[in-house]
Image 1 (tube, rainbow, N blue to C red):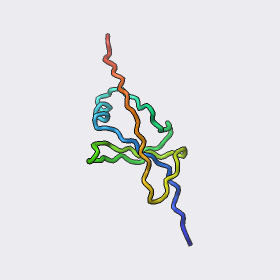
Image 2: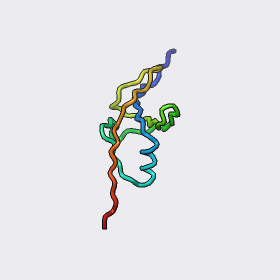
Image 3: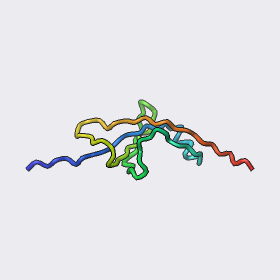
Image 4: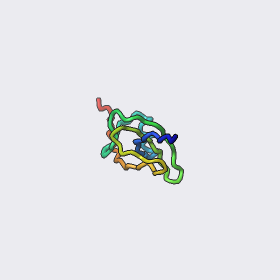
Length: 88
């Protein structure tokens, strides 16, 4: 009996440690050009030492299927920072 591997629909978004640091300081930023739907599932976060980026793995039914043995597509996204200095 042959068991077919489940279909995987994932993409990877690289994000810099600087952006993660800004997020931790409660800064507001928006990822533009992101192909991530609101209901996508974050399936993992890894750090790539060679490129100095975090790799966020997302899964969603709208992504193209990734066959076994193929690399997961990497999508670049632009991060725009929105600073709110709380002028009173």
